[in-house]
Length: 435
Ligand code: EPZ
Image (cartoon, rainbow, N blue to C red; front, side, top):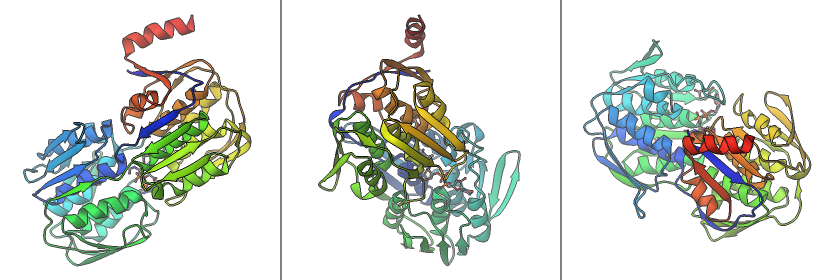
């Protein structure tokens, strides 16, 4: 099991390039299920979750080719040969986003057998909204032995109002609606850039969709969709994470190949904390933080509010800010797994309830052996280790590899002292540290 070894103290200086958006790519890799033609996706990030989705589609009979040559980062997906609309538990349990195939499979094949995703470290993660919406569209869904068995003779358009704002719920039903009979109106939709990115691909495939990026989306069903080529958005959460890394290390960091228009809330929060953020053209930002950082409150909300996927990263930053920062996590019920590890490094954080915490800074962080628990908690610990005194060892970095492409190379390229160790070396290193 790989580990990261990070020696803190270096300011990050230089230019670091953002990869394609994992969460956009996962939705856009499900869309080709809706057609028998080939779909080409560019700017795909080379991360574990993408490989997991490749395995998921291939197991159904689809042809999926991932190429990461310098100019590529490309997925070629052909679901023409797809014969087995089944998403097995063995794969789904490693990636909840597999639920995204449910709607497209039922729309294309008339039936699907998809494992219930189960919970994860950050919360129960139900998919009741996916199920409720599909049932309104004429799908019969039985739940047994941990699987959803979904069947329909013909999907029909429906008027759907989400009880909660759900990103993959919006994506799943949106994809199903493209092949439904008649019009589907969906209200209380998610407005994340990942939705807009998916709609751009579906439109290129021949879908008739209005309202992407707003809370009401209208879809006029068509009889079939065709192939297309689409470039995935830059990853706004990786960009925000790198910006926070530039600020916490008091560096001067240019984050390139990003979309500042998707980063409004994180940029505003960095500026509120005293960092200087300059937009460089339409695809880069420059972050500088040479003075003291000021405390600021963070309350996670659906887009365009402050993203829950950036909460841990800003909590690490808040440990270095002067004053008390209040952090409220409003989207998931258990997304403070990074707190105890940050406290072990010397942070002064008090959890008031299961979704609010107070961070008192600045705290001098000292290097420690810490454990990554989930994707974004890992990012929080990396940021803390970049300023901690000494050499930290981060265990279970496979969590980080799910959503950050070659992150240690990217950080090393702008001055961080970070290296990856396979388990053989890690054991020897740990023995040396523990003395
Ligand atoms: C997507 O997850 C992202 N994942 C998450 O990113 C992100 O944190 C989340 O949206 C919120 O922005 C992908 O896009 C693959 P939700 P998703 O459905 O769609 C409740 C990362 O780190 N809910 O928007 O699963 C749910 O419990 C990952 O990259 C229901 O109650 O999240 C949560 O409280 C983590 N019923 C809230 O809605 C449902 O049917 C928002 O969840 C669906 C969701």
